[in-house]
Length: 174
Image: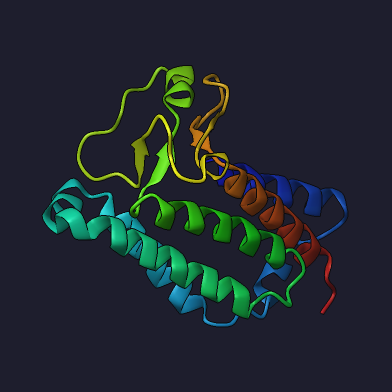
């Protein structure tokens, strides 16, 4: 949910700079259907019956769908801001693959939100000493924020890149 704040920031900055939301439709995204399919797969994985039914395959389906998103971002790197999004997504993918298909979350970050580890399939796993620890979900949003969650440096890059992409696309006069 951290990434949602990047979208909101991009929209607000774009409007403050005189941009128009309608200009977002002018973005020339290549292979958008691949990204939509990959994101849909990730959403479906969080349906307990499906994630649990896939068992040990679920983490690798998650990793593969994340790799598909990185590939789409790389194809679209010519769009201003997308390189930042791609860098963040790549950081997340590397951390996920290095940790067996899960994004490790620090127990301290979970505790900061007052959360316990999730039950059933989740893309996250509480890990005390993960591989590539600095790239994992080691930060927690303030619990009073709407949609407070844990996040990684990759998520920060994704949110910042989305904010830049959206704000600039809203200003573009085609």
